[in-house]
Length: 292
Image 1 (cartoon, rainbow, N blue to C red):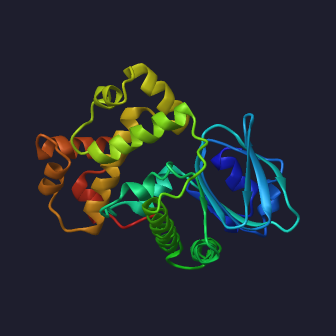
Image 2: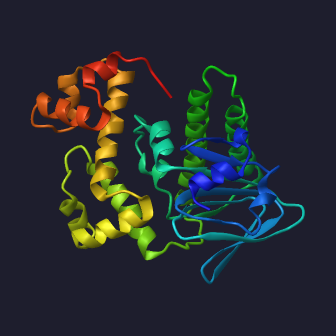
Image 3: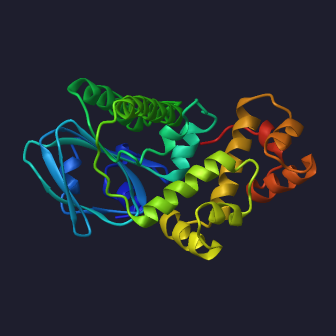
């Protein structure tokens, strides 16, 4: 199942359409026999064990283990123990950017890119920490009458990423060995995204990223399109728009300053770019009522 199918498959209280779905321990067994692909998957096993398969590779995941993986190719839930308690969080690219937009900590890449350790062995305390954030996110997803439901969901997802990022930084510092099931396409996608997050403000030419990855423009385009469902330029464009919309809505930075930060040659060029892709001028967008 792809992301949109997962949202339809699980109860409405588990998701935000076109954004995120969170499978709690109550529904988790419904994943047995299903495959998940074309999305990012966070998997936390609290108790029991499961076996997932990617092509011919089988991976056993037990209690106090956490997976963060790009599931572009089908990940099949092959078996589960009867006592399994686990969570499966599946945010899409848009929701991740919305939740993390504007957050640029010193090691910001650890929050968006954590493929060097796809599977982590957690302590019981670390498992409880991660599960607490997932539980809060799940409660917010089900609170349809809450006036700030979307904002809470973004906030708890951000907290989840911060807590798991903190754990990963500690694991990295003690060089704990990890299991890696990353494919070549995943590697290309991951490193392309890392370059975009680092250089999107100054580099918009796809050739810059292809050259940095020692690929042809066409090959990079094929991989990114297959994995993310959009062209490399669209990924760069969306990062620019995410940053611009954040600055327009959440700060008082002038439009001229925003244009300069995003390396547009002049403010008019930024305004033309922004209106082309949003339908509103930067001024009109800043003055518009917030919508979710």
